[in-house]
Image 1 (cartoon, rainbow, N blue to C red):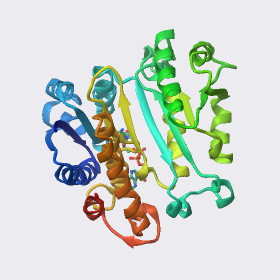
Image 2 (cartoon, rainbow, N blue to C red):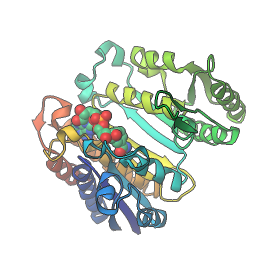
Image 3 (cartoon, protein in one colour):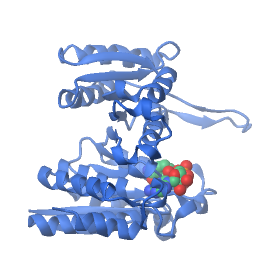
Image 4 (cartoon, rainbow, N blue to C red):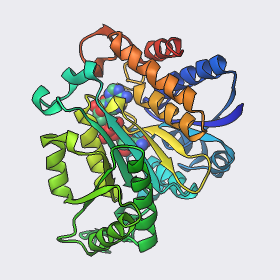
Length: 352
Ligand code: NAD
């Protein structure tokens, strides 16, 4: 099977981690008799340097024509003085919008061998952690009207959600729950925000079509607390854009390192965008110490979306074997020390 994959390496550690993931994908293609055609494109700070804008039109065109888009990360101090409308992160928000990617899926799973790397006590982790955060991605406060008043002393952002936006992301969460442990926890702030009251009403409406799925609601502040108190209580965590952004970082740290967690963004475009949940980590860029596992697992989610399910499972098993064999980038604590590049090679070698 031939698949076209656009690679947006981006900034900071982006080129290092995407190289490792491409190494794994090449080995997967070789093992299973596929041809993956990789197309490197610019987005983020590197695109500002080359084209003057964070998201060149040619990148959007290439992504729309691809079977999958693999992204490293964007941003860094070099571009912090850019005007708000031309920052690297604008490229990220722009590509999500351009591809209609409204659903962001962020699995958080704990590997038993890495439980020491978790900040939580073994007694809290003993029941395991297997959470799927489903985050609404192209609505809410990150996309509502915003502004700074003329005097520069007041600024505002606006949280807006429409019924259809809530309904389509809620359906994604309930469909996923049906393939998992059949539980959805919807996160909002309905005691204060009107947009959250609408969110809750529509989620309850969607739940009527899924009688087998247990639904509960949590205010976001309580959800943040419950995540560290007893993460095993969660199956699918359904969140508006900003709450999902924050809670998925919290969930990631429970698993041991932000360098372990992948995400997929799906919507109306066949491609989908697959990336680690972390940023460009400028503090460790260029040192070959970044953990590429989140990006490799994002590549596995991409294979799933291409319906190459055996291949996706092979990548996940290769990662699990690499961890079980004791290979560790510095963020994962003690073990057989490896850098980013070598970790990619070992995982690729473990593809069965
Ligand atoms: P970050 O996720 O880049 O880094 C947070 C901490 O985690 C740092 O100490 C970093 O070294 C560490 N870390 C992150 N990924 C790691 C990995 N794979 N292996 C080992 N350690 C890792 O978040 P930040 O420092 O808040 O942001 C840095 C830049 O990234 C900013 O410009 C921000 O806007 C951008 N950012 C981009 C994305 C994205 O592209 N999707 C997401 C978040 C932040």
